[in-house]
Image (cartoon, rainbow, N blue to C red; front, side, top):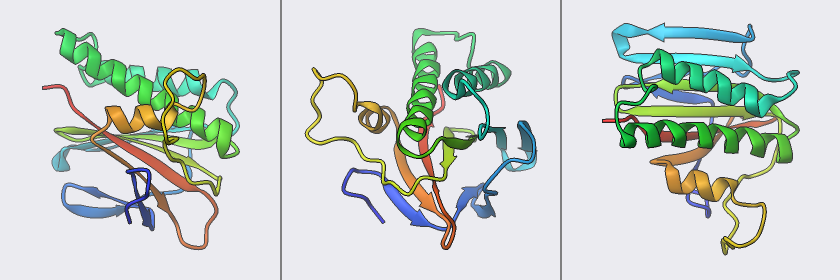
Length: 176
């Protein structure tokens, strides 16, 4: 379902992987885990954030290390550097939003496909993230989801029926 804010909301916690749906677990078993599906061209990395302090820098550092692992950093061009910086900014905004409005993030999942990087932040909050409208660029605060909407190819919310919380996801284009 499309939200009034421009994102999409879906019931159920599934995401496509190479054309097939795969169940997405609600929490990670370890602080950092990898599920690499090279045959499907998908690389999934997860960071548990539930009880961690300093979650925003922790999530950003985790994502930065993945960008190095995947060859996005060090960037070979200004465009590639901008793409990597966009990813780090979106991670910061999604995790910050969960900290401020959703009782804190539970986990960060980063899914790399050939042309798209998907960021997912799971939390226990019942709220509905949305860019503030009208957007007031001169005012402090309230810009997080507006930034996500502007930088990403798409974003949305997934909920599991009968379970608390949600997963807010955002997709960015991989550098060319």
